[in-house]
Image (cartoon, rainbow, N blue to C red):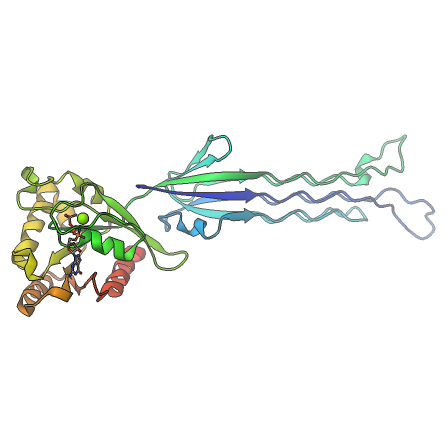
Length: 332
Ligand SMILES: Nc1nc2c(ncn2[C@@H]2O[C@H](COP(=O)(O)OP(=O)(O)OP(=O)(O)O)[C@@H](O)[C@H]2O)c(=O)[nH]1
Ligand SMILES: [Mg+2]
């Protein structure tokens, strides 16, 4: 659940073939051998990139082939080398050989480079086979094939956005609406017992990770409900989305709910409570009393926090919220 995994095929370029040729010159009746060597095939290298945080881009693009070397030519011309290609992966990716299970590399820092498939050597042209007793060689080699491997890439996901709020605030419903995650949703508190991660995809290449964690209640820091242990899963996120149920069904006051959660966050860590936050009024489709929404909006305004009204049932405000999250995490 916490692991993003993808299988890809990498194929380095084959070497170019060596050439069979003899010099043809005016007044030189039998010119010597002049077949050039083939060029080397390109490599496939992987580079750790700090701007990516999922392997999603590779799922859309599972084959990576480097260019082959050009064949050698007459007049001792060596073929051009094939171009190498780079495949970007997020920091934290581990590469395994899918056939053997062998762990090949572990990317821990941005900029790290690892060659996963080596290009094939170019074949030698016939000019290389000349000796004192073998003046007109016709031997020439084909290029060697480039390495080809099936790889399994594994990434431990780190969440970019953490959803916090009371039980039943609609956290799991929201994540199921904006990502492919399908956590359990129900109208009783503490439906979510363990964090769920969802990858929110904006375009083929842009995505971010949202964590849905169990609900918090007053006294959670002292062990009430499920406690605050799960907050460590969102300690390293860049943004918190604080979900507050503004419908009457909660039986509580939205502003008070907000304060209770803030207090629980601060009991876990001041840093967590001070993280960038957006305030999200949920269940707008069944919110009957506009003053409940207004009071929450005012509170957010006073604290200088962005405010969104959503309904996961009708879809109201969902795209706006998604793009606001994206703007924040992708700009960082
Ligand atoms: N009408 C309406 N109901 C919603 C909306 N979002 C969530 N719900 C309902 O609210 C209830 C709780 O939703 P969940 O997504 O499970 O809430 P949660 O915050 O994940 O709750 P815990 O996992 O217990 O912390 C479910 O019955 C949902 O169907 C909404 O936008 N409109
Ligand atoms: Mg839930």
